Image 1 (spheres, one colour):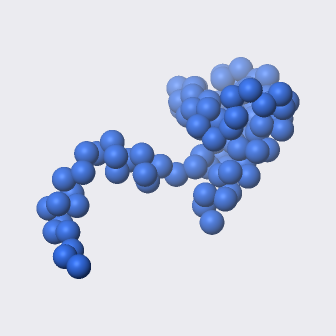
Image 2 (image 1 turned 90 degrees about the vertical axis):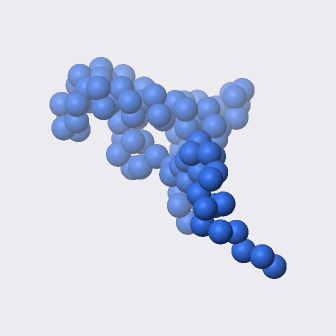
Image 3 (image 1 turned 60 degrees about the vertical axis):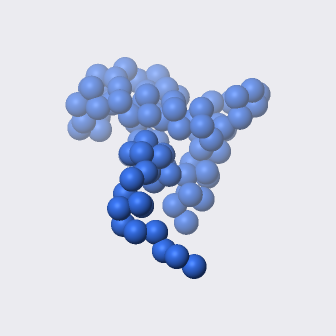
Length: 96
């Protein structure tokens, strides 16, 4: 069976490679999301507590929203806390 040359492998569009290699959110990302969305903290409060820039908090919250949209059912009827637990389970499974 012929093998693909390195030039052929590297010719994939960057977005295809990036999509396949996307890692699940980190524990810190879940912590930020829980503080802001579930805990009701402002982004400023979360930034001070977690020692991150407020801009970074906003980026993490947005990434977590996208993650939830990708891995969780749209109309599940579950509480936000339960959806967060489900998202953590999916993330853990993808890391294994």
